[in-house]
Each structure stands twice: as structure tokens, then as C-alpha cells.
Image 1 (cartoon, each protein chain N blue to C red):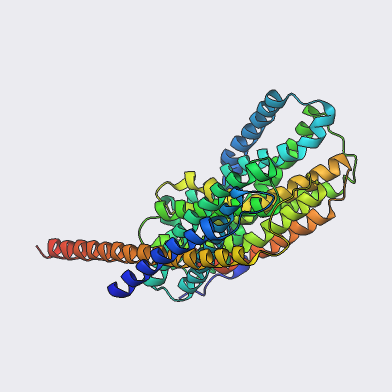
Image 2: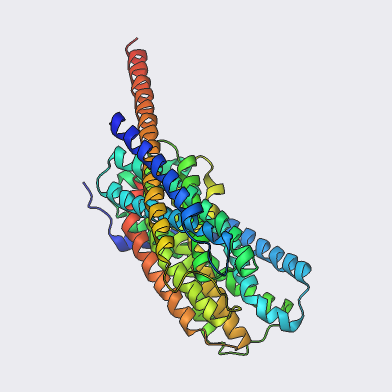
Length: 233
Length: 228
């Protein structure tokens, strides 16, 4: 497993270097927004990776509830953590982009608010995992993950209704009318690079979690042996 | 060997026991009442609303105070079952877990509904409220909204009671999931109070929320209560 991991990590770094070059130097400057639009090449791929991680977390959690598999649980925890990190990046780069382009840091529109609530839900998942003791954490976390996943579409629709009833000033922005071809290339390269980077980090976190689990098992086994020896003596 | 108790029996007896305990101690209802009374006072000091603005913010205010107050009742739902290992005894018994869950959720529903019935006149009085829309919808919103808080709250209380920080965890995991329900009940209530728009879509959303999460709770409760 080790060489494959190193290979993937090197590939992620190389791709990241290339895609950053594409985004900063090759892609043309956007006519209306200027240089600040280049944040798009990081913002959107990060959002994609966060969504992907949360989806992995849901799948792994559902699987864990059927088959109590420690490896699947490690994967669920790893993907939730990495998802929260990428979601945080999205929530930081978003306002940085919004301020010069929209004139405001933040607006409570459907997509922004849903992303924020998503972040809150998975942050609460991590808090639960941190404070749940022993093997319960895996089951409790998996259950919360199912709740969170069911909640996301309801959040999105409720905020859409909320915003249509309380109209906001019309906001220009987003890239609704197709990308220029070099922009598209830069974007796709970044998408690929960040996806592989995200997967590599999940993989690394997963390996660490497996070690943690093994250590915990060893502690448990040692405690059992000790109490058995104590009982015999 | 006696036969396993049925779903209805466990449900009835658990609700009966919890209501009797609450009737004798009045722990939850007193703390909830006093708590939401304080929220009424604090909000009116913080915002100093006129009759017109209070109509617009009252929906949010009422539900925020009920949400915070409900946490008090939710937290002690399972705490009393931990004493003398009553919950462990239940787990090894052949009684269906969902009957226990429904009994606890319905018990909390009763407590919070009593709180709402007592607090609603006070809110109306203190904030000079008068519904400009169809006031008959308010009980419907109250029932759907309370169930939305209580069903997930009872479930998450069962989860948080098993962690290291116990009661502290409940609001941290309950509030993010409850955000759309809170949005729906606040907007439905505001719609009725101001009469500006129709609350129907929010009532529908609350119904969907209730159905979805009641189903998930019933599907997962057995798993969570038996988690090792």
C-alpha cells in the first residue's frame, strides 16, 4: 500500500503545480471581474471535493450501520474531517471573492446558506466523534451522518422558499454563460488536481485512523489480559 | 417464562411513569417555564420592540425561547433512566426499543406543549400581539413544530447521554439539524401574525420534515440504544 500512496501523493502535488500554473498564468483574465476571478479555480474545486467527501461519509456511514466494519468507520471519519476542511476553504474563499465582485462579504442566499449549514452539521459530527467514548462513537456518528444527509435537501429547499418570499437585491456574478476554452481547461485541471489531493488526504487520514484503532484494540486486549491475570492471582 | 411486553404496553407504561414522575417533581416544567420567561424579558430588553416590529420578530422570538427551553426537558429524558441502570435493564429485555423511543418523544411533546400553552398568553400580553392572518393555523404550526423539535431532540439526547460531555452535547448536534424546521416554524408563525403571506408552504415543509425525521428516528433508534 505504501508505494501506491506515495505515487498518488506525488501525482497530486505535480498536478496541483501544473493546475496552479494554468490558473494563474494561462487562463485569460476575466473581462468584468479582473484578476480576482482566478479564485474561481480554487473555490469551485474545493466545493466539489467537500461535497464528494460528505457523500463518501454518508455512504460509509450507511454501510457501517449494516456491516460493523472498523475500516469503513475509519473511512467515514477521515472523509468527514477532510470534507470539513475543504468546506472551510470554500467558506473562506467565497467571501474573499464576493467582497470585490458583489460588494458584500456574505449574503444569506440558498447556496451560501446551505453550504454553511452543511459545514455546521459536519462540524457537529466531528464534535460528537470527539466526545463519544469507546466503540459507541462509530455507531452514533453513523446515525448522525444519516440525519445530516437527509437534512441537506430540506435545508436547501427551505432557504429557497425563504429567499423567494423575501427578495434580495439582484446579484450579478457566477459564470452562467459558459467558460472561455482556456478558462475551462484551467478549471478542469484544477478540478482533477484538487480531487486527487482530497482523496490522498482522506487516504492519509484513513491510514492514521486505522493505526489509532489498532492501538485502541491493543490497549483493550492488554487490559483484558491484565484483569484475567489479576483474577487468577 | 413470561411473554415479551407488547408495543402498546411499553408505550403506555413508560409515558405513565414519566408523567407521574414529572407530576410529583415538576422538575422539567418549572425550569422550562422560568427559562422561557427569562428569554421573554431578555429579548424585550435587548430589542425594545414597538407593536409593529414585535409582530414581525415575535415568531422568531417565541420559537427560539421554546427551542432553548425544550433542551431542558430533552436532556433529562434519558438522564433519569441511567440511574440504577434502568436503561441497561431495558436493553437486555425483549421489549421493542421503538416503543420506548415513542413514549419518550410523546412525553416530551406533552411537556413542551404544556409549556407553550402557558407561555403563549404571556407572549401575547407582553408583546401586544394580535394575529392579522388566520389564527386557527397557529395550533397546527405549534403541533408540527414542537414534534419536529422533540422527535429529533429525544433521539439526539439518547446519543449525547452516552458521550463524555453528556448534556452539553445535545444542543450542539440538535440545532444544526433543526435549522430548516426552525426556519419553517418561525416563518409560518410570522406569516400568520403579520398576514403578509401564506404560511401554507411552510406548514407543508414542516410536515415533510416531521415525516422524514420520524422515519429515520424509528429506523435507527434500536441501533443507537444498543451501540457498544
